[in-house]
Length: 381
Image (tube, rainbow, N blue to C red; front, side):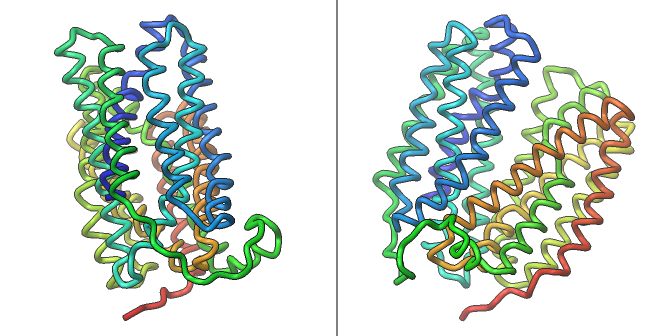
């Protein structure tokens, strides 16, 4: 059910986000700089909120209410995009939407860990991630179809995006029952030094590995730019993200199930190696067929690693601090993603696409070296 909650919200969000840059520039007359400011501010907001929402869910001992608040804010923001007559309301809507995303992420992931038995936790995270990714590629496809049907009416598509957002909130409110929490140490601020020390060295090592790995995996926006760089027609460029997310969605659940049966470190290392191959193909590509192979492998590596990393966080974090752990882990990876994307942009401007992707492959090697510092997972049942 949490997977379908993610799916419907992603359909709604991607229907809007896939069109928002065009709406800002062609519909509201915004500059490209303004588009960058809007997106950068939105992602930074989500990063800051994530850590506090996870800690708060541990402090109060409940997670569903915070998840509902986060998804509710995301749904409430959607009509504002349709109503926007200027950039100011779009900025406000993106701010509310990203605050909602920041609030819901860590409590939701902690709730997945709370609900799933340890023996199938990898499959549980893989299933949620797979359904989430179905929404990620369905949203742009639906937006494209509606834009064709409604002759390019941005606002009509934005109003339509409100429907899956409402379904998402109703599913969470009615369809998800929060489990009883196990006995925990006395409540207190999970962000105080003593509580953070309880997370332990295995968690902090995992957070470091996650950050270094994310540093090697910059924003998927560069896949789109690479497609355009190789001469793909602008109208077809969004299909690059559809292909990547399709591969991601297909792989996430099977590899989640595999994570319950094999050493997490081996599977994570295999995922990093797939990213190395993808980076090399994308960097050296001189034909769209090679680009497509790299894009599909990029999606495969996401399917192999993203649900796995969530399961690994749940494995090493104490149950009463899971929300805090997911918040801190997401913060570390999100900050690394911002840094990686800035680095990739600078490399692209200075040296071109080939060097950008080959440097990414080199950073993957650094990530591989750090995986050896992780401990073997505990096995239950």
